[in-house]
Amino acid sequence: MKRLLFLATLSALVWTGKSQTAVVTDSLAHLSPLGETPDWSRLDPYQHTITKAAFLHQWESNYRDKEGSAPTPLVTVLEDRVRIVKQFKRPDDVYELRFSESPNPSGPSRTWRGAQDLPPYPSPERPLEGLRIAIDPGHIGGEWAKMEHRWLFIPKDPAAVASQSSPGSGPVAEGDSVLLVAKLLQAKLAHLGATAMLVRSQPLPVTAKRPRDFVEKARASGNFPPGATMENNAALASAAERLFYLSDEIRARSRKINDKLKPDLALCLHINAEPWGDPLKPQFVAANHVHLLINGCYSDAEIAFDDQRFELFLRLLQGFHPEEVAMATTVATVMAEATGLPSYAYTGPNARRTQISEYVWSRNLLATRLYACPVLFFEPYVMNNEVVYSRMQAGHYQGVREILGMPRPSIYEEYAAAVANGVSAHFRNHRRQFPKDSAPAQP
Ligand SMILES: [Zn+2]
View 1 (cartoon, rainbow, N blue to C red):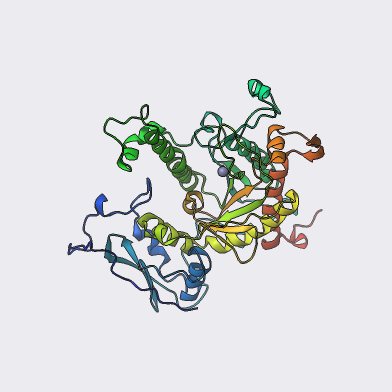
View 2 (spheres, rainbow, N blue to C red):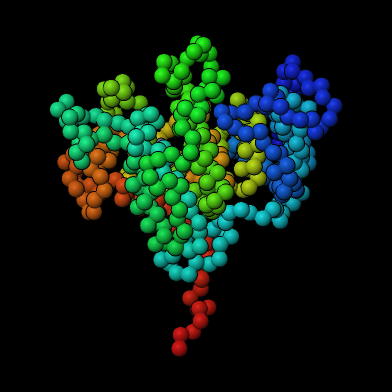
């Protein structure tokens, strides 16, 4: 479908500078929290690498927040190019990306390898041979779990509060649980031939910064009374903490992944939760479900941020989406079967169900946006479902154990095995196998 997106006057703020190379000042940048002013020349290698049809297909079917979204004045699609406003507050300064005329052009060299790019795998047991995978256990856990609001304790009886450290009766923390899954998964992926790397291997932040380092940025972002400190103003403390664990921590992980680990694939491990009410008296819910997230579903407000608009284009041009949607579909099918859980359904505008799988949704999260490789973001189980909570409390074990009247495997083993089986199924389906008859003859 062809659609023209119109560039409109954004606001009364008119740039009067004459030079295209005018120095960019912070006052002109419109950035998300801790976001960096983009270097648009990073899109230069992608000139003439995508057809208009391929661009529009991804833009409309995945990257916008819904089919037929209203045009954004910041992105104008012309016959032979797309014109992108570089700075929200300076609509006359644009970046022009030219389309290629024919499909399948020889684009820029990829920084990652999909199933089609890898050499044939050597044996049925090692479909992931040579693949580099970053495993990102979500959140921080440990002493940070309460600050992250990823800590849950629902005592069976009030007396249990006193013995909350004993196994099987204490609190659970998402960051600690997914770290356990990550370590099991690392061994399984290595066994399948992959180089599997943990983004964090302890319940500690990847960033060297701490909440206190963000007090001044937090203060500038809100209306706090003069003399407010983290000690005397809970709202200021919370704002600084959120910059630390929601933004800077993920940005530090993205630098580690993009600059050091350089993977072909990143797996972000999480466990979902439903609202549990009063944190001092959290409640169980009956719901339990599974879904996977890939990057997409940008709202007008998100596209208005200079950094997010740039990151959307960088992602689209690097070709991650076709690989993400194909892999997520296979992995989700395996996970749904392994867990026996139904799919989750978002009801708000911040996520968009993919056309190919009811379990796979597009959503614009910092991790799915910044990690420079295909990213699968896992959200199986509901932490405050009583069965899930009890299985998390039980820790990791071999075989099955009776939990709430039913024999059940370790939830950590079930999670890790489902991810490993799903990823290996994708590569078995899409990667060539080294043909047996071309192997050197045995003497
Ligand atoms: Zn999470």
